[in-house]
Image 1: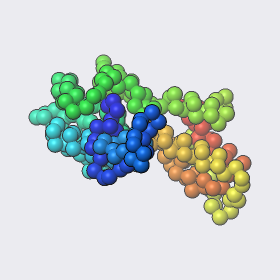
Image 2: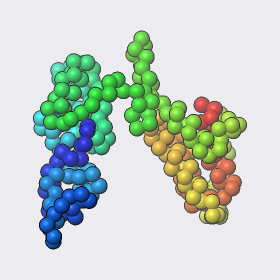
Image 3: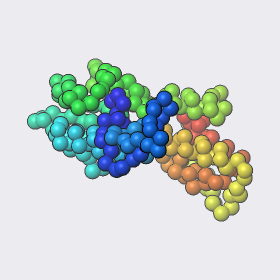
Image 4: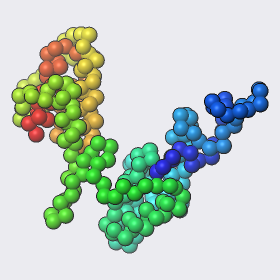
Length: 231
């Protein structure tokens, strides 16, 4: 959606100093009529606007599990709408319904149709129409992750954690390198939630030791990176 944040009228009284180049009488300020980029309320204003239109005008139902997800049933067909700020992902069991709802969105908003989805929030989408499969991956993200932590040429491992590893949180001393520990765990969490549930146990296990950045601890958590290299 183009200039999404500018589409909603501001409910509160918000005043701004005149921007450079705008001539105002001395002692005067400007009152905003529309939401503006950089305004604290803008994200909420935009979300209220798109939510109202999708639900009331297009007839979608907002998911109670994930407020970014909407769905609509038309007979035997179902259409899904996924919203991330001003990026919209549409999927349907009927291609004609996709065209219908894309046109519906253009009634209210200035949108740009980027065609078949190939990447969304860093998640790559690959289609195998012959076998009716959609494959999600984050190969590019993993490659950047390995390079970021100097592990692009590391020795691969077939498992993300040593099965015999048992750590006592009280016995592990903290060191100044704890920030690197938090950085690695945070990057792995994004991957875990996206497309790699196979590293969930390992990431959650080491998340308990984020402030314990000993060399040994970082070595343990980097085993997950070695596993990603292997897989």
